[in-house]
Length: 210
Image 1 (cartoon, rainbow, N blue to C red):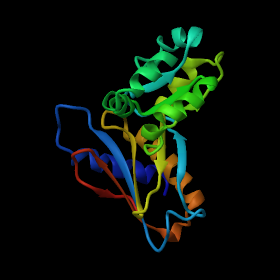
Image 2: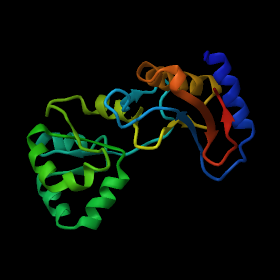
Image 3: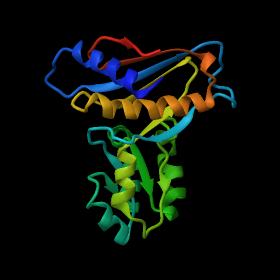
Image 4: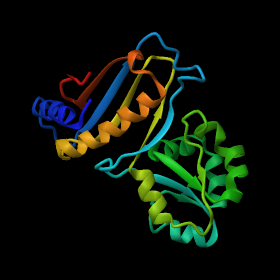
């Protein structure tokens, strides 16, 4: 599907969306047929950088000590030291809230064993185990990339739903993001197995793409 046609469908979805007191997300959903998304061949486990960004802020959690901890606090409000990791681990409710508040996590490599031991039970099932990054890494660049990346994880149900931006973004920018997602999925799942695709705002009408 070409970007011009996608853009027209997005314009239609935006025009049929009632104005709300919050900025609505624009979401792409895809339905599949005659396929087992839990099989190794078709299981989706993708992290896609949206070329035009997500259009809104998300939280990135950082586990770090020392100098990396100091630098991390300049780019995220969700930073925990080794001592704080252990402290949170003693309060499961507090740990679950922290995990829910963050879309993704990165961590100082030597802290990964501790995180796995104490936080694995919370982060593992959510698909949020941290990505280890070197202590000298360029944190602003890494965090910015994560903030503009969407995660696609297929489950048992033959469908996926992906945020591709917000309603304030132009239809053309949203179309660029949608194209990246469609292309990535179609590289793994044959077109004949894709039953349909739809675009909608959070509270808006569903518009069929394909």
